[in-house]
Length: 285
Image (cartoon, rainbow, N blue to C red; front, side, top):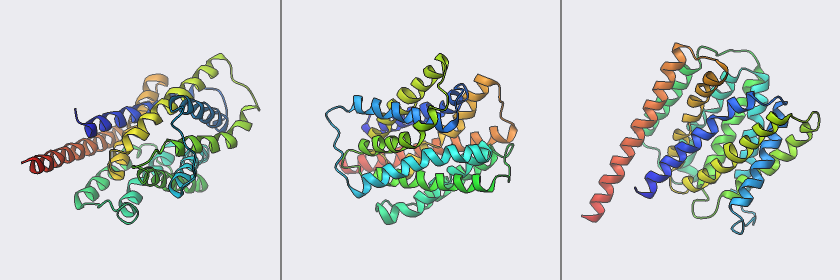
């Protein structure tokens, strides 16, 4: 297996872990900001343990930008979910591929091909279908927060990709540190029970900590747009775990949208794999 193929699989595993967050959060009886703060604190500690001795927090523009954008992604997503429907929050956050497609050529020199725009359109169209069953115009400020989540997520992806020749894990640790500073005070409003602590441990150590270790390894080997398109598997899988765990079933539009997004990501990955194989064969011929 090539390193690029391994990175694709590990990024898909990251999406799988991230997608489990919705169900785990539902099972923890705490305010959202308390969960976010505790999860980020545990995630930061996990990443420091995994990368012990290899971390260097020398500030660079890309590193600081990624940290701030990541903290913004985590915090505004919680705020959006609180103020509007979760469908609106996720749908508007995953407009991020559009921002990446527009900005990657200018900021990273990574060309956005005409076929990439077709996949972006397919992904966004699938997202609209996927959440059409629960889409609501209510919660103007929540919708605005969700748009900011998408911008922050795009900025995080671009800034992490800009560190492909360095170690981007410090940005993630710093981002979690910033989020913990904002969220941890809410934890002291009411401590969780034993099941709550177990849920927080899963969210912090596995769902965020280990998964982000996989993410920072993979993003150095994949393009920004490819990365963010693979990660759209997260909002597709998220309601699957919620349906299995608490019985919330998606409707027919949601199923059609999920099929569209998964199909778009799969076809694009296969097309890129063929292009890469053809290019490699031409270089070795």
